[in-house]
Length: 138
Image (cartoon, rainbow, N blue to C red):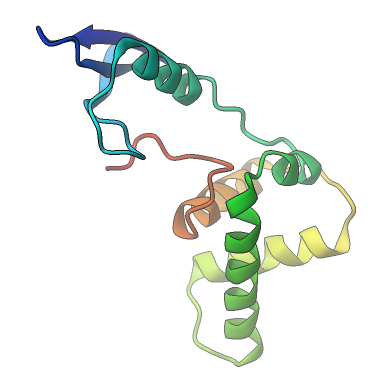
């Protein structure tokens, strides 16, 4: 993914995220602060969004976590496990999350399959983990 920066006459910068030469999203305010961005902040955010590394294996997944993600992961894991143990009616995604979490518990490390990466991406989105950010969401 690429990006272009542009500014208004007041030196407030925005980011245009591009993929294959086509604009896929415009970010006018910083997603965390909600404030307008100067050139330095916009450039830093754009580079961060465009250089996202997706974890290839279990070890990278945990290494890429930020401090707040560990608590979110623990809550998510507890919630999903509780649903499965209590016999709650679960959807396909919840079952896939549970299977992946069990695999993570059983194996010290493994490389994610394409399907597991899709499940992991959904898991991160549902439970707001920054490991695999969803820059297209809004």
